[in-house]
Length: 308
Image (cartoon, rainbow, N blue to C red; front, side, top):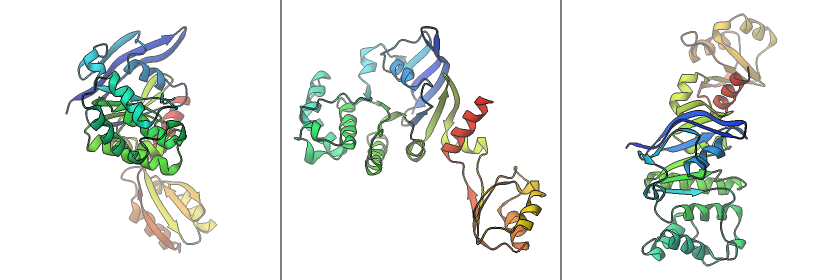
């Protein structure tokens, strides 16, 4: 489907502080791309450069193969930042109409109706925005970002401060936008669970450098951070634990009550080997299986390596 966003060796300094140290990554058309990093890592600076609000000191930035400075390219981008920029003393419809007029949207009324339906606010379109909950404001902000039917959405913490049910609603909307509206979504977030649930590709930035980038499933396999989880009935006796420590090929990593977590090296041991060992020593097993590494584990392991 082609590349929607291309960054190549982007550098940016503010005063004497080097914020971005030559970052490079691509966002493919149709991606829901998660952009992760701790506070001060460079996420906000990256977004400002993507939107043309800041100019990179050096490097190459293209949106659909063209310069971000072109009006025709900016029209293909929608964004929702924090704060949301909504007008409290206007209704949802009035807010959307205001931005539809700015973008000179033809048949704005029909577009507004479809957007309110998309974000689940059709029954609240005539209510003042100052009566909206945080989650409703975030959904309206998404609608406003799409009022001119852009191809790329750039979102900064779209579920920040939203309750769990509101987060679920926003995730569903984002998946719908990507799959049914055929949009590319660039999502900056601290919410690792959220990114893991909806993003197909991620990049991790720390201290102005990209530490990890690619398809989430491929990264899990590449990092090899998954493992084998064994649920026992009653845990394991101390004598068995002592024997386990003498079998490093089984890869015992952690014990939490009745749950054992193993991370054997590839080719050393499998689920059946560990189950056979435990059963042979009288350990009663409730459940056993492989578990893929979570995004949180990848995130933590990468940052831990950087700290060394």
